[in-house]
Image (tube, rainbow, N blue to C red; front, side):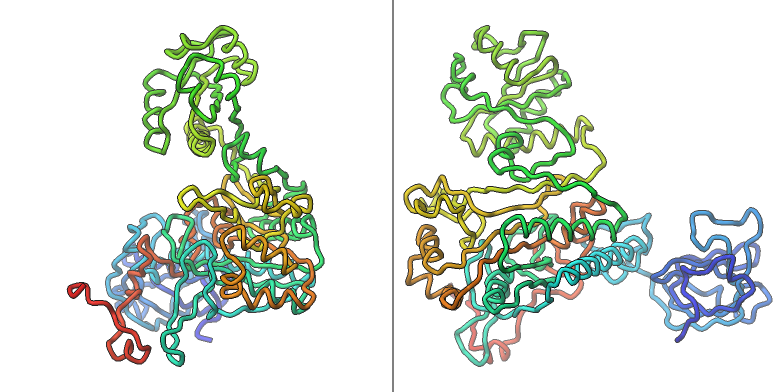
Length: 579
């Protein structure tokens, strides 16, 4: 080894010992002819000292930031008044007797310093330098710890870690596939997996009983802070289980990861909320439960008013805000609602047992009384949105989260909740067809199986999401394992038997050979790591992420292929000018 100690482990107990350290020059200071260098490696920082009588003094004086060096010296206690309580190694320093410059560095294009953060493009272009920053090292370490904790827990529950293929058949899963041309099968393409969904179900047919993997998933979709073209799931599947069995395993695993990663324990069971209740109270299936502000459906009351906007809308919902606001503050919220998909925002100020607003003239005394009773409001502002059911919920959900932040109502805690009993199908207005709310392999509740085709809008499924602080952490379901039932569901969502056989024939074929009842779940691993640190951007926990255009400024991907490489693959690029 080129070193005997790391830069993060030395303390007073090591005083008097000789140590060899390796790392990067974080800073150099010349104090009265004595050179102090903060030497950094993955484990921490140690101050090393070059005295004027050192034969390496002149070389040390020429060292610059990010030079990679090896030093040997005696560990000494710092003098009284020179201690650095902000550094774990702040009680000692190493007086250097040997210096070996392993590699010189050009002037770094970005600062390797947590206090000076470069812009996004520069961080991604010089990611290998950005990752040297101590905070990024800690994030990679947390990700490692969380991964090991997941494996530790699942291994203890008799799961097998099994890898599924990365080159697969293209099957529709909600997003666009990334595709790979086959050289030996010209004109044919593999798809990169959006998830291991079909393969983990096949593993259940194969008697693997309990499977998991930290699976790489790839989706060609528009990016945002919590989405990347490639990401990682903790993917698992279990045979001979019911919904609660899966929930118990996933909840236990998540609690174990949180405890091992950040030392926080959750002795209580996670809350459970039905999808219908979540939509009713919060307008979303991803409720942030760190604060109150529940929505109230006042459609029936509002329709008895003389306010045409209320009377002519499919739904009217109210968001009672306990804090009073100025007219200027309310006008800003109205503009914000319009910018975020709403047609408008009606409001009324609560004054004792009465309401004050320009819309009050359309509200009879009886309507006002019933609104106050239904919302249980004694003070503050009542905000109303009237629109379709979908838009009303979407707008008020966003407004609720905004008010939670603006009014500083959000508690510093982690609030997990299971959302269960989702609807199985949702109507696609553009294509005038039923789409699966999750995916088409989800088992409908037993009481709806006989009437699937007659009333698809009423069907609920054995489908469940885990939500943390308003963010979906993962999804899962009990799967369909009976081929006839799977074909019926596929037919409802627009995959008649012939099309189903073309796309999913290998899965349907396997179900004919005694497929067991099974169910599973997938946790967004990058997202979980980010949320554990209170961060929304998953790129902070990916070693080499892409930018918003799905490009890597560092390596230049995606890039063009040479003409000869395209020829081997029997591909030809369309000439835009000719087109």
